[in-house]
Image (tube, rainbow, N blue to C red; front, side, top):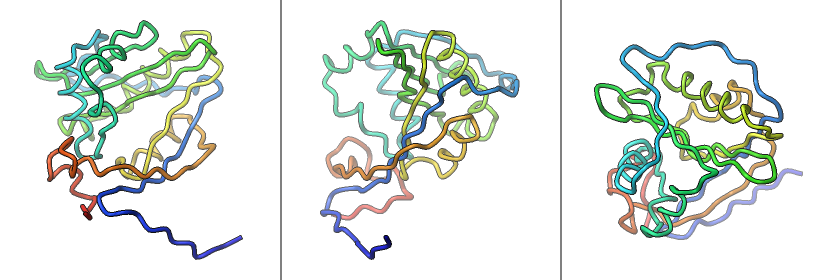
Length: 196
């Protein structure tokens, strides 16, 4: 049934359509080499490293979820033995974030995935996604899942679908605009106007 149901978004808030996607078996991969001068590495992040890469990868897309965490809360996430972290390094600087969260019920969440502007358009995203899929399905999981939203890169949803994920649910999330509560700089996410 079609409706013309608009809903007000309170001042100072952002509304996002969130798409949930899943993969029920390992997707076939097209082998893609690492871009020249780019290396992949696993790591155990420090608080400073994680906050830096989280901001540099996510500032254009208004990533804020982990910026609300206290040191103790974030350290607990970073120390979780069921979570794996990877990055791509170019010219001696880490320029990507891949975070995989495995659960006791046999699933893996692609918790965070992104590149800084230094790697966007280089083919590094496909290379890193191949690594994510191989790493997730190397364990005895039955489901690999993620969610993305309308604040993310316009290419994100189609990239995930091309990678073998299938959308299965959409939701609307309303949250504080992170620029208005000093989690992100006022000029972050320039493609999303600030109202409030």
